[in-house]
Image 1 (tube, helix red, strand yellow):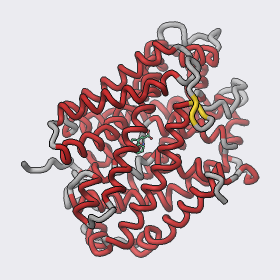
Image 2: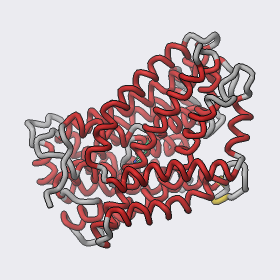
Image 3: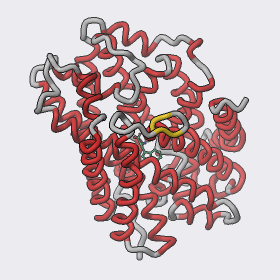
Length: 439
Ligand code: TRP
């Protein structure tokens, strides 16, 4: 059977951006920035994204397009030995991330509905509203189930045209809505303090924990370190420039996260919310802004609908990595793989759904959801990133050269190579060990 490819270069860019842009940009990035002291975190994040992040993304595209295979198969074909373990680690990371990602995805569904049923009103205390909801076990499990069902449905139907077509319309819509919200947020009385928190760095706030959080966020937001971009790269036609693609996707993803900060932080300060409020930050601040806008219920429903869709296009890429591997390696039909794996991921997500107030479930001194997130984002993804960079820089040098220059010269080829060989692996290793408190 002829392997599918993306319909066009733009179609591929938007699908890859669809994977990258999701809850990571609008939920995770602002709350981590708030919890890690603001502007200094943002600066470190940007630095890591445009050195290590973009380079690892290019490495993933190279591995994917040169083999047209899933991550495990790609490493096996290019080199074999112990390398496919990197692919397996990625499959495991996809499984773990999706289990709690779907719980947060469920929150967005709840908030679409709640926009019309009491959430958006000047008298609603949005903090209590949020805590009340996430502490309600049956409800959070129900919405987690709905989100997972939507993800399974798309992957079950096959990703081909569906994802690409949706992303082309919905990603620009999300962007426009963010711009409207920025105008509303920065003109709130008291917005200035938020902008200053977001843009005036206080370097004393940078600790080894901040660095690891920023690194984990870079991998999480760009969908790196677990083979999602290897899988998407495996559908790229030979006529697309990979360096240009990595630069474009990285830029789009970072732009959306950066813009989201201009909605969240002015609002946080205007309404006297704590910037370090944690995972609820976006869900607590945004309803307050909507309540102040004429037609706030509609804006709110529209926004959470777009956020749901952004989350869905990311969730699909997570499930697709696991499904692609099981269909290739175990020979399962796509339908069976999507259903069985999707159900298993739903089950693993239940403790994450319950651990935010309903039932105390703690691992490593954190709630279950936070522990899963820490394990995947701050451990599995950076480790995957080290090996992916080393692989592109040392093991498949000639292939890497050919793939990155397929559409003309790549002026930064040497720089990219040395980032993959030395800079990225070393920097990730140092940040990783430091952040875990190992030196
Ligand atoms: N990048 C997505 C987000 O920001 C989440 C995601 C999708 C992801 N696929 C991934 C994270 C692969 C890590 C690896 O919401």
